[in-house]
Amino acid sequence: MPLLKIQKTSKQSGWALWFITENENELVEASGDSIDSSIVSYTKRLEWLAGRSLIKSLVEQCGMEFYGLEKDEFGKPSLKNHTHFISLSHSYPYVAAQIDPMLEVGIDLEQPKEKLLTIAHRVLSQPELEDAGTDVIKHCVYWCAKEALYKSYGKRGLHFADHLYVAPFALMRNGDLHGKIAKNGYSRELDLIYSIQPDYVLVHTKT
Image (tube, rainbow, N blue to C red; front, top):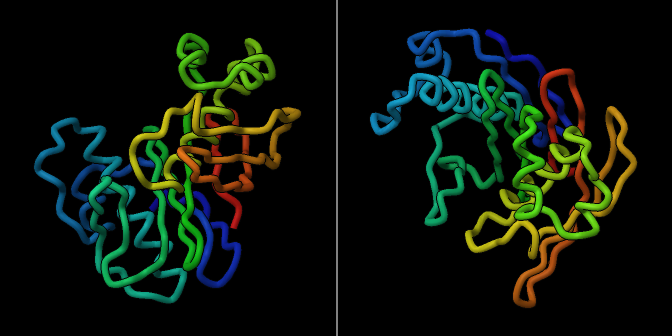
């Protein structure tokens, strides 16, 4: 089982990372779940099953029993029979997940790609664009941070450039970020943590 890492921040809070090497049947067994028949892509099916396997591992690490996942009206995943908040991210062959009993969490994992530069004007505010420049890695950190903020918010209707903000930062291998969600009178500030690895960037809300 390629569960690469479980990072606990408290007894019932933390995040985890999975590297997919299994076939579909192996992941069905690991997750204890049957595949969503609407998912046609083989890669997406593996991600879907690995995500459930990872959440199952996190839940069990918290000393609880895993009963499966369900989605709310906005498509945000939640645990059946538990009130803990969770978040999932897929970027094949990696899957990341986060859990916390009190805080609405958000986690995102992406592999840096040049296309981030072409869509940056739709994602980043002007100060963020100036800070990121042409550094693909830094653009990826911003992207992941905003995805994590979006997942924490859990509802639709947020525009990345207008409603999600990340304070400028000095790029390191690991570091802290300060984010803010602001829309129509709603405002929430969150601290995030990022990690840069050779083939991916990971950002999650701080718990």
